[in-house]
Image (tube, rainbow, N blue to C red):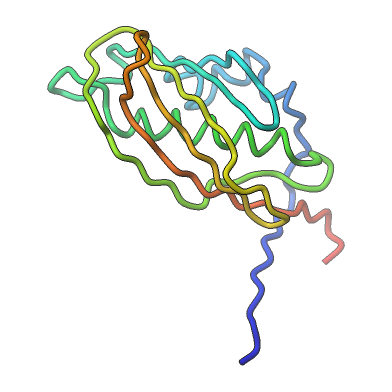
Amino acid sequence: MESVKLVFKAKGVKNVKVEDLLNEKRLSETLIGALGITFKELKPDLVVCDMPVGPKTIQPMGLLHGGASVALAETAASMGAALNLNPETHFPVGLEINANHIRGKKDGIVTATATPIHRGRTSMVWDIKITDEEGKLISVSRCTIAVVKINNGDA
């Protein structure tokens, strides 16, 4: 049986460096800015970022919204993947994410810590743990990132 290879290519995608992604004005206009996510540590094998728990990130019962936790987790994994890619040729796109919410949180700050499980040529898998200020586990996620080739009209 012949194997099938999926190739992701994107036309018209601008080359964006990680430093540019961290531009405060640029971030303020994205979900990252809307949720108040801030980056504390950025390395190819470790990303740490914080998010406040408050009116923008809670659900109607007053607890941290699971979707906000997942957005934080994917943000950490995507930024980590970006640090492992050449921005002139490739960019990361979230392909799949799952999460288990372990404990609720009403206020304060949650911290996502993302580490790579697999860094391949066409995909990456990241493990993300979200904890509170006391280090208690709030949520765990695994995120698969597609490594997308920038197509500048050559194919």
